[in-house]
Length: 114
Length: 114
Image 1 (cartoon, each protein chain N blue to C red):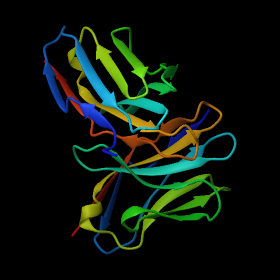
Image 2: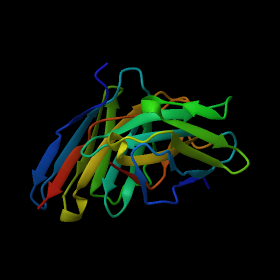
Image 3: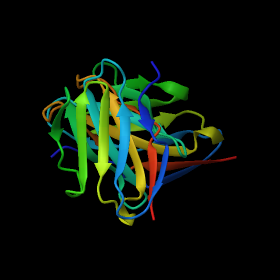
Image 4: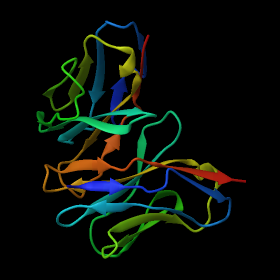
């Protein structure tokens, strides 16, 4: 069955430090992977996606994600966190074998402290 | 494009009343998703339309919930009768139908059933 796991409910990091938000996936066939961010009282906002090619994907607001096929992971990273990065982050996979349905992880709350 | 438009943004209703949530997807998108978000259950997919046809409604909680997509530019989610446990934020999202395309979310409708 297709699924996405975000093992951490919450990640705490100090401003200026690098951050990583973890995501692992399970999907048959080639994975199409996405990261979204949700700020309070807002909808989910697309950050970046992996389709094919370079394993390091760059996205909005200085975020990037590393695709690792052997570990079935797609971790979100940023070299230097900002307080304004504090939000809820969702990893998602789109399943082309199931009508291109999206499967979302449970979300990880990122807290960046000054 | 103005993005995915949902209305109303907030809805407060009494238990037993009918509630209708509305969504206008991005023009040209042929996939539409309805999600529900609560603290307890996270982000849940309720129903997924492709080319105006419901593809997967396995997430619809019970018969009190129904969704329609009469044309490519409009969808509704109806709850009748509403119950306090239906209180949540309901999101509509749309995307192109290809697996390598991201979904775009509306701002959501915050429903409170008292």
